[in-house]
Amino acid sequence: MSTFKDQLETKLIHASSSEDIEQRTGAVNVPIYLSSTFHQASFDHYGPFDYSRSGNPTRQALEQTIAELEGGTRGLAFASGMAAISSAFMLLSASDHVIVSEDVYGGTFRFVTKVLSKFNIDHTFVNMTELAEIEKAIQPNTKVIYIETPSNPCLEITDIESVVKIAKANNCLTFLDNTFMTPLYQNPIDLGVDVVLHSATKFLSGHSDIIAGLAVTKDEELGNRLAFIQNSFGAILGTYDSYLLIQGIKTLGTRLRQSTDSATKIANYLSEHPLIEDVYYPGLPSHPGHDIHVKQSSGAGAVLSFKLPDKETTKIFVEHLRLPKFAVSLGAVESILSYPAQMSHAAMPKEEREKRGITDGLLRLSVGLEHVDDLIVDIEQALHSASN
Ligand SMILES: *Cc1c(COP(=O)(O)O)cnc(C)c1O
Image 1: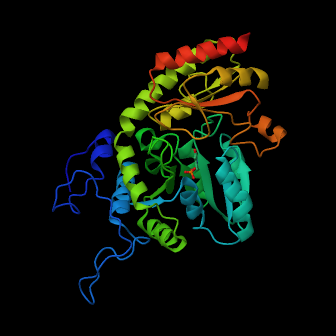
Image 2: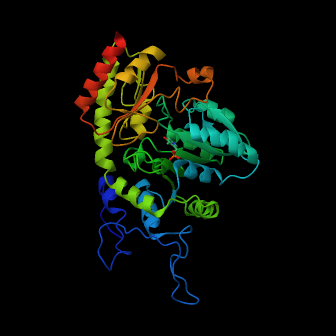
Image 3: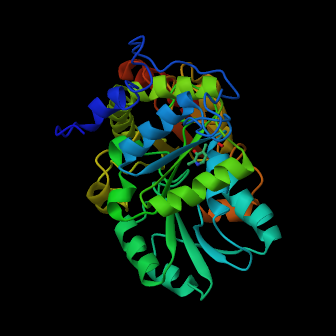
């Protein structure tokens, strides 16, 4: 064990280096081990790998990487963020109850309401910024409190430590979706969270190329239980994608810091523009969750939302923008603009949507790595067209 305490940026590069695996060749990249099965050299002593659903050396390098980055003991890689999230929910049993953040990611909302409910696992959605609401929702069979902070698309902030305290006092586990912050900015395990989850499709891989999910636990026994589910349910990340994700993670530090700088400039620019009614970005001191965010996270991230007056203006604005891709998803090298009312929250009745602040004029921007001046010039000309 090394006595040096490396910064996260250093770990991003070196956590996956597999001297133990690659002693023979010295390859600086983890090899892609395309092997479903592994020869057992001895009749009664088997090696560390037997079958790639249960364990694959490339995937293992990735799993050890995310465990190290999050400060956990066990990392697990899944076929998608939703596979990681739903596998974590499989830690529950019939007749358990979960408390979930009401502005949780749409796929998580769908899994909790349409799938978990079939197994007699009940749920209550609460506004996680109101701690009293969480306490009120606790039942004798509540087993998990599920947090997403910042949330999507209005970037509301949950006080992680306070929720963990409520959970511990009531013998519940806490799960936290850390997709927007990544271990670069937010370390939920240090704050007492039990299971950290990621859609690694977003910032961790960073190039809009793969779909992947990760989970990390601090407690070894909990990690073993989740690994058992990973192997039993079988929604593992493939070997090629494990390799691509390892490569993506290496540049996370530089990518996310630059995108955060640009997002801050764009948020400030939009706040000053007369056509923009509201800007949601935890880096703005005017954001209602700003103080809590600064306390628990070291960066504001690269995602912001803003509100235009109505659908017509929004349509003209989007049609005039040149640089951002108009698409779902986020966290990539290219800027991505999405329209929650017709994309992520299309299935939600208009009234429910608007209650959550998702109006027909709300847009979400994930800021990429283009030059920020080019992005602002582009936004400016599109806003100019929309103003006329
Ligand atoms: C995209 C996303 C997910 C789902 O991940 P997939 O990789 O698409 O399955 C979960 N949570 C958040 C916050 C996301 O942005």
